[in-house]
Amino acid sequence: MIMTDVRNIVRVSKVTKVFKLGKVNVDALKGVDLQIAAGEYLSIMGPSGSGKSTLFNMIGGLDKPTSGKVFIDEVDIAQLDAYELAWLRCRKIGYIFQTFNIIQVMTALENVTLPMIFGGVNNDEAVERGIKLLETVGLGDRFRHRPFELSGGQQQRVAIARALANDPAIILADEPTGNLDLKTGEEIIMLLKDLSQERNVTIISATHDIKMLDISDRVVWIRDGRVDKIEKRDQLSISVCQIEEKI
Ligand SMILES: Nc1ncnc2c1ncn2[C@@H]1O[C@H](COP(=O)(O)OP(=O)(O)OP(=O)(O)O)[C@@H](O)[C@H]1O
Ligand SMILES: [Mg+2]
Picture 1 (cartoon, rainbow, N blue to C red):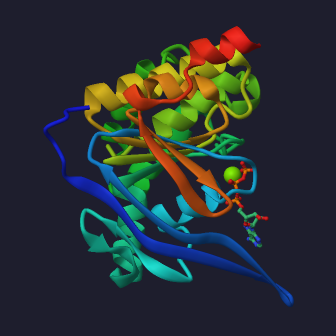
Picture 2: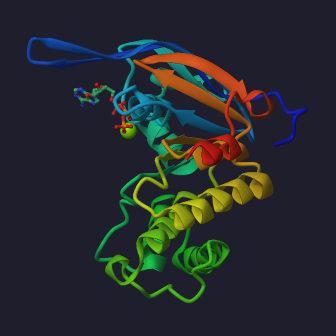
């Protein structure tokens, strides 16, 4: 990350989210404030049910806060009309999910080119860019494979290539290594790190994976719908080495 670049690409202000389940209210987010600089690699850590995915859905414009605001490039996304919101989701943000979510009946290449076609890129150019992206994630020899012909780690690489399809400014990765073994997970983490450095993409990644800590610029600890603490890498109270010593 370029430390002189202090532009906030994401600003979350006093965000709350209440889910209503019949007569029961679930307070998933209880007032979250967060600023994320352009090009930053941010990890969001927290126990299951602490509100990580809910926060992601707010930042990604996939769901609306009950109160509070989310700004992307200082634009309040609640003010966007349906067309502008679709543009934001398609062009500005790339999404990676824990369960890969790639389309089973499509080849790796078709999965990667689909968002480009939605974005108005012509077919030849989409194929050319799709091939380059699959090469970037180390799948240069797997264009025509369908998801069931790929390993979990390879499927997640397809998902990463797809997230990069329209050259997004932000990648939201919700537990991208959650369904992968340790070594494959590490490869995916390093791939995201390289992408953030080479393309200055802002990466916001929810994780339980302690290996993510050492490569993050900052770690946000979420507990019970609130930001518990935010640590810069050099201030981390624990490190992977310490954890490995304890195991
Ligand atoms: N659609 C929903 N309806 C009702 N409650 C919900 C909904 N989505 C999430 N919740 C609740 O909100 C809280 C936060 O959930 P969330 O999915 O954000 O947690 P998380 O930190 O992503 O957990 P995990 O690490 O298990 O993925 C939980 O108590 C969950 O049960
Ligand atoms: Mg989650």
